Amino acid sequence: MLTCVTGVSGSGKSSAIRKTFYPALARIIMGQVEEIGHFEKITGFEGVESVLMIDQAPIGRSSRSNPITFMKGFDSIREIMSSTLEARRGGFHAGHFSFNFPGGRCDACEGEGHVRVEMVFMEDMFLKCDVCDGKRYKKEILAVNHNGKNIYEILNLTVHEAKKFFASERRLHQVFSTLERVGLGYLRLGQSSNSLSGGESQRLKIARELMKSMNNSCIYILDEPTTGLHFRDIGLLLQTLDELVERGNTVVVIEHNLDVMKVADWLIDFGPDGGDRGGEVIFEGTPEDLVKKSYGFTAEHLSRVLEGGRGGDVIRKKREIEFAKLYASSQKVKKAAEEKEARLQAIAQEQEAKAKELAEAEKAKAEELAKKKSVAKDIASKIVKKVAASKPDKAPAKKLTAKKSPAKKADSKKIATKPKPSPKKPATKKSAPKKSTPQKKTSSVKKAKTKAKSTSSSRKA
Ligand SMILES: Nc1ncnc2c1ncn2[C@@H]1O[C@H](COP(=O)(O)OP(=O)(O)OP(=O)(O)O)[C@@H](O)[C@H]1O
Ligand SMILES: [Mg+2]
Ligand SMILES: [Zn+2]
Image (cartoon, rainbow, N blue to C red; front, side, top):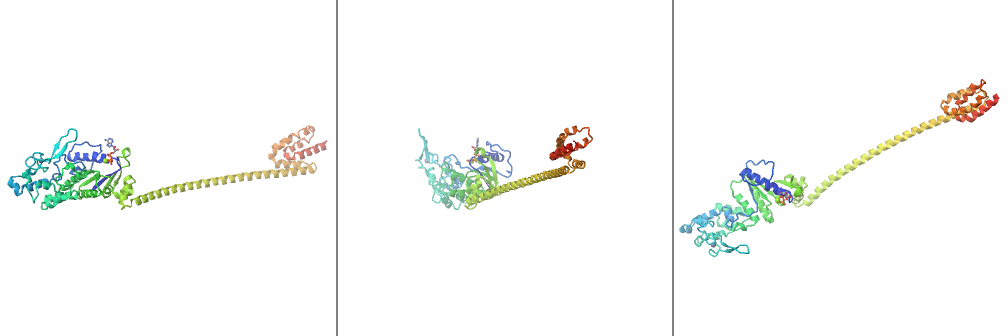
């Protein structure tokens, strides 16, 4: 499985993987003692045999290490050289063809091919050894040939050339084709490893892993392996990682490169941003799902390569959908607001109608009352007129008014006060009780009444 850890710079990828995941596994599986970042628990590592960090750091610190020694192919070459007729005649064995041990190597430069010259005010200088002329071996060793080439010339072969040269050597052939597969076919077998570039060192490390015949239960961790690599070399790197995965290993790559992300089986995206705004796993899943379901920076950029260069369209489409959703929801809100408004308006109208109805009812009631009043007034006035017009036979008329308008008491009281003085005079007369009856007459009858009173009094008089 190829797992790619993604996220913007400072989102916590290296802290999580290189400083925590790797040293923790290295301690659990291989007992390595390294400082480990804080973590709660690690599970699922059962069956994993080793965990290896493959970085771009130089391999080996000495200039004695080179691609062929690193790939453990030099032993085979020395065996071959020592088995030649010349070597056997001279009594040279495999050790004589090593530049690490005294014997066959140049004593003057100790097999380095150059000598260090210490400078007082400058960095040390390296000068070609004039004893061996930079060829690292003694003359008698350089006289030994295999198919026309001595050990110096063999170390000067490129991987491509060496593959042809040692075509019949099964083990060496495998080393050279592996180096070719990781894109290092152009390297010379003896190029000192401290002169290799970061990318070359890294691919060399991968190549060595690929040489292990039984490796299928390892976890390989690479922190930004494509840094400094050309597009072509990124393709090569991916091929080699793929080969490790094909064998059943797990490869965890921290990577910003979209070409690596898109071929990953699983992505773990850190974010959402760098520094304090980072440190969270914001997405975990396939690259396709990341593009579909996540809205982080990685999703946006990955969509450009995943849809065959239509990234812009995809993002636009996504935004359109988002906008449509937003628009729909805003329409919903708008509609709900309109409905509420309409409901409130309906209630207000209903209330208004009710109030109007009530007011009308009140008005009608008042009118009815007024009508009743006027009718009563009419009747009263008619009666008064009748009484006034007719002979002073008031008794029946008085009785009638009294009965018809009992509500007019207040008014009649006022009136009643006026007739009072008149009954005083005839107080002794028996008509007095009769005279008190106008009390119950309405105010409108006042004049008529006083008229009637005066007539009656005049009549009495
Ligand atoms: N020892 C530390 N002390 C304080 N802060 C740290 C320490 N190590 C890392 N950080 C901070 O934690 C954050 C995550 O760092 P980390 O190296 O994991 O980021 P990254 O995702 O690998 O970024 P890049 O892609 O740039 O390599 C950064 O903001 C970094 O400055
Ligand atoms: Mg990092
Ligand atoms: Zn020398």
